[in-house]
Image (cartoon, rainbow over all chains, first blue to last red; front, side, top):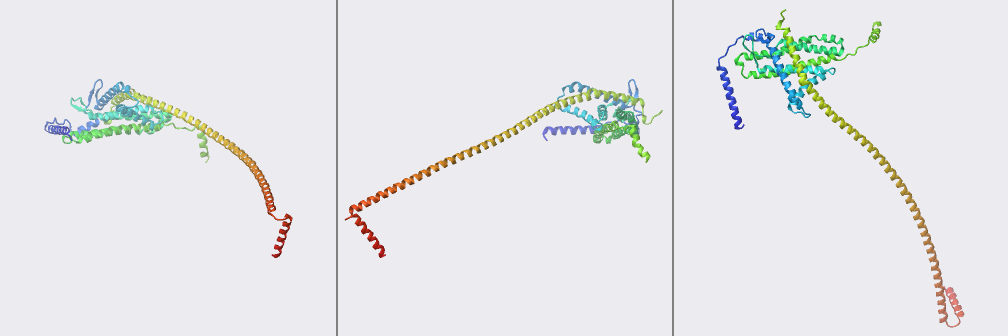
Length: 282
Length: 166
């Protein structure tokens, strides 16, 4: 290790030590709510609501969702204007990343559903990006002011049960649309048989992201748990959640969509009668 | 109606509205352009591949054509070679027959020459013997005393006496 690196390491250790001492010695603002209330509010969003102009008080998850959408669309617009026109046949790093992202969901749609996968690929891309970046959003710790005038850290959009229900139900309707497109009205029957998907997809998302939120909430509630542990709990768990949940929902949607949209050959009625006749005679 | 878990239909619709905007925007701004570009690149490389396949196919056809020509040339060479060998055999047989004929002529001439020389030698030897006999006789005559006929008779008697004594 050379002299410059040693100096940097020393400065970094000093900064960490100062921050540690400062955070211990600094007067705490105190908790405005108990851990029980904080946990309950993380699940139900009963007390900490944020005022959305024109709509009224809404759950913080909705504000997070709108923020994520705005950021993602702005980034997509910048990429569309400045990056995509400079695409080359031999891709650079950013181009490769974008192509991998698009082809990941496109291939997921094509491999799981060889029929009518154009719309499915686009939907999976949107849903995958929403879950992935929405989950990572909680790492930023963006603050918002609640209706009570207190500061509140915006959670992941899908830790709000309404967002999870929306995405689960929408995915189920996408699957139903595949069933109808593949088999007409006969497909509706097979789609209705999988009605439990509505609940399982919605609450799988909600439960997974909520568990991460609760653990993070618990860890940050106590000062003594707020050192080193959040690196594992908050960052790594959030990254894993982002990857796993976006993969699970998109993969399940693609899988069921492919299964439902598969065209089934139906026997003509005359043949069915003929084939049924010997059975009756026996 | 109070729905548990603070589920709010209005907020669900707001989330749906938000997601619809996000999904649509991402589709228009990212998904479609990137996919179009990848399709364009795939078409470009597919075109190159098709061209390469076409060139390869043409090369295969040319190769087949050349191989056919080569096999035909080999057949022609074999045929010419066989013809040449046949001609060579005929020529060799002709030459052999001619050489044998010439050898026969030479042998006949040699035999005739030998016969002639033999006859000449015989006649020459006869002549020489005759000449020798004459010369001997002359010498005997010239050196003899008395009548030759008497000498001859004496000699003859001597010969008889000699035989009888034996």
